[in-house]
Length: 178
Image 1 (cartoon, helix red, strand yellow):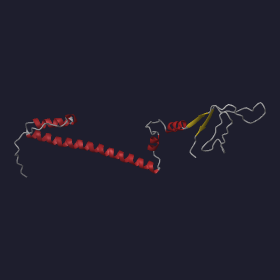
Image 2: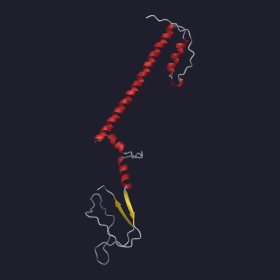
Image 3: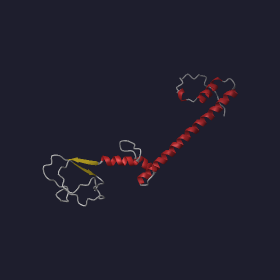
Image 4: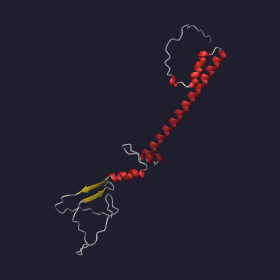
């Protein structure tokens, strides 16, 4: 194939290449292409430019393949989580609440959640006797249970029953939904 060099005009368009994005190696090769006097040196500069470009593309491709593998792994972890298969990543993700707060352990997050669902009812100005009846309430019942806080000694009248005269605070803790 015969090539005819017929364009006698100089390249007058401004150079729009951002030089901060050009590696030092490529800048050196471009300088050699522009300044070398002998054809053998210009050809060597062209050969090195081809090799440098190939090396840059190879590195970029390796990074892209690594990112694709990471994307595939994270996608599979998400699919496994949705399918109900427990993974380490699921436990790690469970440490993050809906506001993006990251807890150091899953237990600390669950403890905080339980503490935040504890409801304290303050009662004041009670003028009449009120009864709160909880059937089948035990120390292990669900959704409500009780825990022994203190022991009340028998009243001096000999009545073994417990009589509460001043109720200032009742605390209910939600264990689970009914």
